[in-house]
Image (cartoon, rainbow, N blue to C red):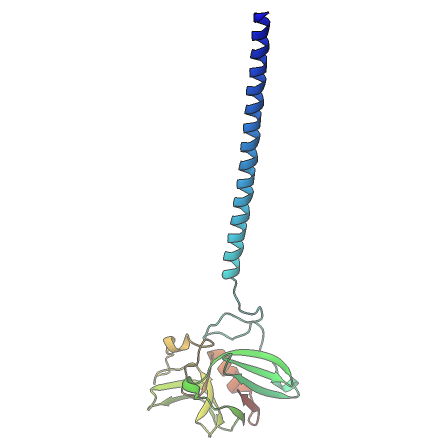
Length: 208
């Protein structure tokens, strides 16, 4: 009888040990799965945040700001095919918009005047234009200039150069980012060249 009781007790103990071990393994596996899921979720969230923070905010139709290149990744518009061409200069955005009525047909990176020195209002492209100038008093020059006010005083032109026509890279790199000129409207080299060759005298210019 005692032997039988011992065997029964031994079997019960073994069953309890096996049950406890199974329970522990199951809990451990469940905890590991939960931790892995949490880690994946955290990693995914982190990757998503990283991706979002590194997203380029440049519109798809624009090239990244580069004063040596055109602003958009498409050909310049043919102004002869447009019926109501005018120029909008946005001081807040540091952009020049080539407009046809209410439609923007091309956007250019720009730098306007520091200390609000670019005049606001409505003007018209004037007769004066040239492929290079140098201003001794300001120590700056530029290529492809087109006057819009005071007959050679306020201009559209390239990013600035020295007296030999060499571009000032430090100033040029601010194009499209901040106001840096003495009142004129700076453009990238290709944009200014196109403007010089294609925007006609009398074209309306609105600056605000």
